[in-house]
Image (cartoon, rainbow, N blue to C red):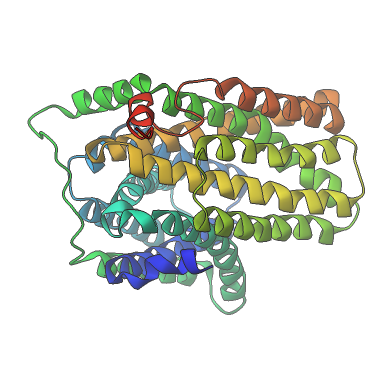
Length: 406
């Protein structure tokens, strides 16, 4: 726990972290409040679907150039721009009202998504400039934990607020979270990336792709993550509620909660220890989700599934801390925004497709077969990337050679 608290000793990081904590809670509030806002419409189902889809698509599209922008400009200022874009889009939705034309609401949601896409690469690339290198594992553990619990807290806050306030008022309150974020970022002295702004943005985007392709360990892990999100995360997201809600609703809530507790444990341990081969530990940690998948495939007792969900949380959080810290330590600072943008793109780009495939697969072959397929894909994908140069240590082969004792 001491390693997680270590970054909070640095005032610049503490200030930014508190602002982004409020920001993430606001994102969770929006996800609930926008649905409540649009429910009275006669075409509520299609409108909510279009708004959420447009927001997600806007975020995915903007990631293609968000990383290049984060490597050209001061990251704190880019986050402020992101907050202002999202606040403007949300304010427009509020002014238009829930009965506004569907295309207008969808367009605003797309703009909001573009702002969200600008946010993550800039935030992730800014963090190493706020704390010393030894504090980065704690930074990433704290980010992992607060991100998970902020979404839960934001959802609860939206539910409680809906008892006393209208959805419109809740969305207005959400606007305040953007203001808090902006205020905490003003005056932050993060390091300006070294970049030649005379080059075109398209050139920088292409250079970012080239940088990743040249470093096979980064490319291999990103491709493995893309497969896992598409083929493993999708079935789990659908199978868990199908299995557990049908028996007793409390079991599904327990599974989600226990996974969050497991994530806390995994993040804490990963922040406090630095393994000699962080890549091997991180990739093998992903296999902690295998018992959960096997329990789902066997349709084991809910208590067993809940317990293994906790183990899955441990592994996923441990991987997140080790992987993010490795990128922050071993990627050139002027490329970091683009690398994090591509990491986010590979992690989220196929998520909707994965959910569609998972739904079709479960409907076609059943829960058990779908879970067995997911477990097999997980194991094979992890084993397949381990022999790639640099994956075991999460660094370039040249860097590995340079640290060999003489």
